[in-house]
Image (cartoon, rainbow, N blue to C red; front, side):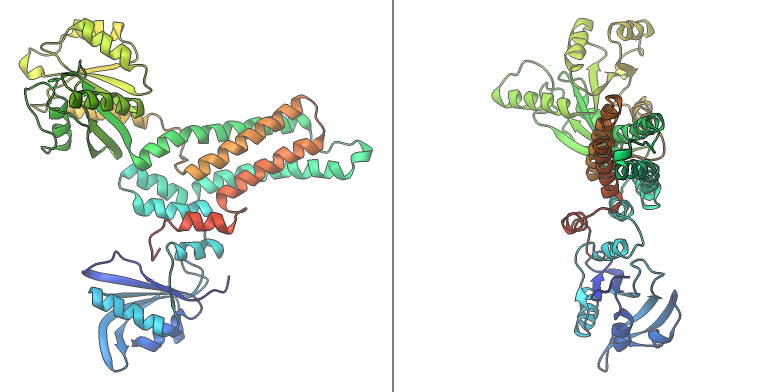
Length: 458
């Protein structure tokens, strides 16, 4: 355990509430609280126990509290940890922290409790980063992804890759010690197969980053189409609130309107856009330009058209122009409440003329088939998931990408029969990149950049 100062911070959100929890961690945590806690002497008690008492300032009672005691090394940080549950008065919480400071504690920096857990070997770096992701998770998928990482799922994958690679790296390093004798301890065929296998695993992890980013930050979903197709009505129906102005006057929506919705555990960032047509004025022209800018950044495009009045050639022209974007396109026939329903022959014709596009019909006004639309787009995103481990952290992605590049160099050198010392350099660099992910190779600057984004008290 690394000896450091004893830190204190509020671990619950600031502001008035029913309860507030103040956390201390460090070698003097128990002694500091014993000085201000009127109840059982905490230094004499066993770990993982809870005590009722009063926080006092000299003879003045500040609050009646419950104190939880966690002695090292069986605590979150690996140090002595005290958690004081107070009433949620801003004055009370500030006063208790002030009393702790007067007894020798120092205010914790953002993420300092979790950093201490990492430094004291209670978790590796990916598990520590997952703590912040867990706190920020606001959907089921984001929560599951953070929990899998916090429980060591991702780090175990990386450790497994490193362990297998280290074995061959040590054999190649041994060859360098016997360079003059021209011997090979590492079987080149086995090494090549291993490098290819590891490269395949890393490639899968790299491909999962797109999905991880979706689960973490939301799916950019643009609602587009010609004026009066019902785009704003669809947005309002999906959100179940009157967020966008709805009018039968073409060109009502002049600027993008953005909102967030949770569909089957996946967060979608819905963007309602100006109708696509020849602009009538400068403001509308800017709005339409922004529509196309949003489409270029979208993962999903819901193209809405008026099923009662649309022209097949115009629809085909619009979709083919929009297919230049990277978005998955859902072609949605709206206003079915004004017709006898979707013509199956027409849909079949659309599917033939517009392949790689999902076609379905709805009535945004009457809320018909909206559940089917939501199920369809969420199922399309969920189908991208392959395996339990999903990369969602840009730092991890960058290190994996570099590791993949070094593996490619090692494979090229093997193919060309290059000497073992150059292959050893590539493998060392690969191990360095993988080690940086889990914190087996780290710097103070790296740790500071990671933990400064945590909330204070965690």
